[in-house]
Image 1 (tube, rainbow, N blue to C red):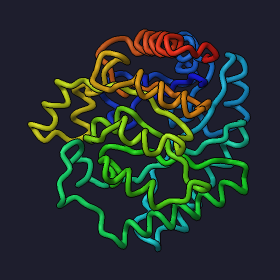
Image 2: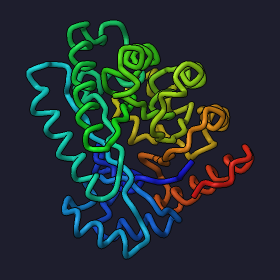
Image 3: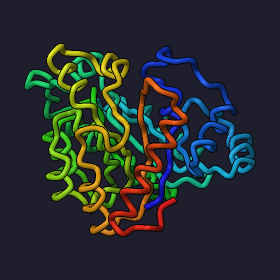
Amino acid sequence: MRIATSPINWNNEDVPDYRPWIPYPEILEEIRRAGYRATEWSKSLPDDPRRLERDLEARGLRVVGAFVGLDLREPERHPEELGRALEKARFLKALGARHLVVADAGDPARRRAAGHVGPEHALPEAAFRAMVEGLHRLGAALSELGMELAFHNHVGTYVETGEEIDALLAATDPERVGWCLDTGHLVYGGGDLLGLLEKYRDRVAYLHLKDVDPEVLASARRAGWSFEEALRRYVFAPLGEGRVPLKEALSMLLEAGYDGWAVIEQDTTPTDPTETARKNRERLEAMLKELGYAEAF
């Protein structure tokens, strides 16, 4: 299992004003200072692969993937959305990355319902079928590029709850659509992390690690907060300080032979983000060593 981080620990595009934005290339220095050698691409980084590759190499860093939200719920949007995804995939390939992390784009209604989704928020069957078809088309195109599609369960989208994750994974071809398991989003959305891992551990192609503050989550559900409001209230806790059964989940993944990237994310934090990112890395390394795995970096 290989450890990476994401610029979202410093600059969160969902709530860009919650703290001062760290400019480029200073953010690469912060990632390096936190002890990481790998990160994801985000809008905090340039879209010129030559410039970015030069700046990464100078700091001993690499890019391993990138996140993109796609609206595949309407077939007529597929050409535009798939074209946008493939453009990003070609950019990533030029940097030596292999994973395109894809989530449903959601909409304002689902973002308002984050963490407290009801039957009235369910995706119509035709839209679900369109999403599956779009993911299969994208997965096939990425395979031709030598890339992999990892679908990200995400709060505030139409694949948030445990039932929605189960349905999406059951309906998609494992050869075309892997799973980017986001532990924090899964628990935030009310899913059974260990239960879903028991069923789908072999589908995990990429990993986003977060923890969830149970008190903030309870407040978010009680008050009906949006995803953005919950982020501003720090719903994601430092690793090991929340309600996510991280060590048990990691144990299941290691037993299944998972040897891919574990990208540590803490979308917002009231403390210094670089220090938080460093502590989260150290805690993950300690968990992996306790599980008898000593090859992470």
